[in-house]
Image: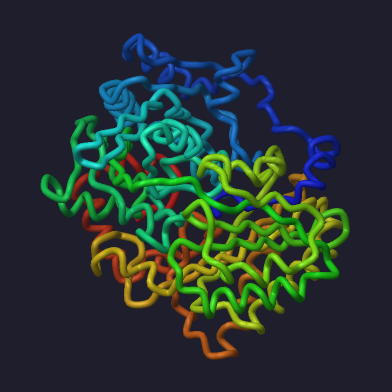
Amino acid sequence: MRQSLATATYLAAFLAAALPSAAEPQPVEARSDYASVCKAISKAVSSASGVHWPGLDPLYSKDVGHWATSSSAQSACSVEPGTAEDVGTILQILAKNKTPFAVKGAGHTTNPGFSSTPGVQIAMYRFSEVNYDPDNNVAEVGAGLIWDDVYAALEPYAVNVVGGRVSGVGVAGFTLGGGYSWKTNQFGLTVDNLSGFELVLPNGTITSVTQESNPDLFWGLKGGFNNFGIVTKFNLTTHAQTEVWGGLITITEDQLDKVNEATVKFSQTVTDPKAQVLPTYNHLLGQPGVSLLLFYDYPAPPEGIFDEYLAIPYFTKDIKTRTFLDLVKSAPANVTGGQRAIFHTVSLLEYTDNIMAAVLNETKFWGERLSWQSGTFISYDVEPFLPTIFAHGAEDSTAYPPSRATGLLPLNIYYAWVADLADSDMQEAARASAAQLTQVALAEGQDISDAPLYSNYAIFDTPIERVYGANLPKLKALKAQYDPENIMGLAGGWKF
């Protein structure tokens, strides 16, 4: 997931005490070649916005900081626009001066430079409203929010949206990349549940993008990230929401074969779209274990669905009927923040005995070796969605996925470590592990050699063709149409 479903409860206290807290940028001087641009922005924007400078300003530290410290950079300044008009003004100044910049929602990417820059850091925190329209079943959601805020705002109305699965994940990057949710089996990806965007085009123009107003741009934004401008608001379809059932179970090494067996049976036999599981295989403190999240989208599940999991002896168990937001917060997913990190991924067609054995083997293999490279947390998220998840959208209705003929199951590899000298070794290990798991799947007949990879998990040097497939030429043409000067090319991320 965009943020791994991290650790067992009994390890959270250890991590909080033993590992460095979220690193704050050290005071630096603004680069002179970008400082003048920062000053120009400061003079041009309205009082609704703010410009912050390196040094002792805590808002600057917040703006440039990321969940993974390896994704942060020292910017010449940070800007928190408060209106779409100010976003347009900022883009025009950046374009005029050809200044590198970054756009950050919540800052949960692990790819360095995707939402950070030595130039001007744009932080979207002030776009923080949630407005619910019950007549049209739409929630207008600001681009600076995390999903926790959205769920909390909608809870009084007994409705919800298709969003992130754990606490702290941002709305913007998650949505613009696709979005796998607890509700995906029922309603598809987040991009399948969008009815519109407020977008500031690279030339500074503010536009409302819908299927009716701009069908090509509407298509491109659903998976195309920041290639076409800066999104300030999302219009998300709402769905009725009751209390839910589920939570976190932690399981120790001696029971992991049973977790494997239960996961294979669940993925191959359970067809109830309200039921989901998310076993995360972790290597921490010298041994493997599993943090298992169970979810049922109703106050109680039918008998039998989760029996195999519930029969496994556990270390801790927090399963109950609760609000959706409480379930999202039930895993200590933020406890590994403040370290260096990388994600990578494999797209699978099914979870089999061989695949689950390989996941456990990779957890042990890399957990033992990478601990010598300051590795603190080696993790594999197993995500057994229904094979019909892509059927909730029409073929060619979104930039991602490039094909809806076959549902793909993203497996997320997540490594965390302390020493910056270990960056390249940890990243290379993630690539090697993904390659090994791919070979295991191919050997048992899963046709995934060219399967699209989920962009919110894929490591930064993944060929962009592996994300967008046959949609890439259309996306490049769309990019040339709406950003002929390549202004958005001054920002990081997946670029067409």
